[in-house]
Image 1 (cartoon, rainbow, N blue to C red):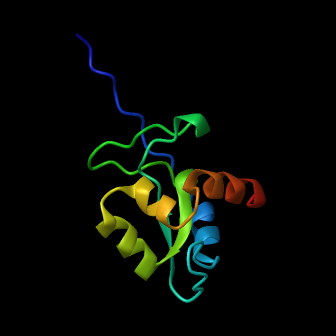
Image 2 (image 1 turned 135 degrees about the vertical axis):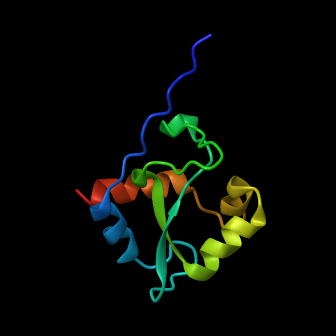
Image 3 (image 1 turned 60 degrees about the vertical axis):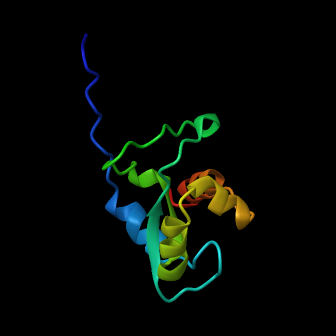
Length: 101
């Protein structure tokens, strides 16, 4: 049996700086925006699940203020948290990628 080697995470400092310049995509706060990495899978969007102790590629980041970012992590189920906010994080990340070219 061969183990599949994990692909290295694709980092993008320019993308992260762009995300930090935006207001929070949930509450609109523009004072403490952080790039929040989407860990959940979105297979319809081409986003595979991110394993434990693994961060997804930087292209799968969205702007969250510190408060919303901590709330999202504390909630437990990432996709249910996004659904409770009426937001699609995959579409947000894809849309921001298109506007940051």
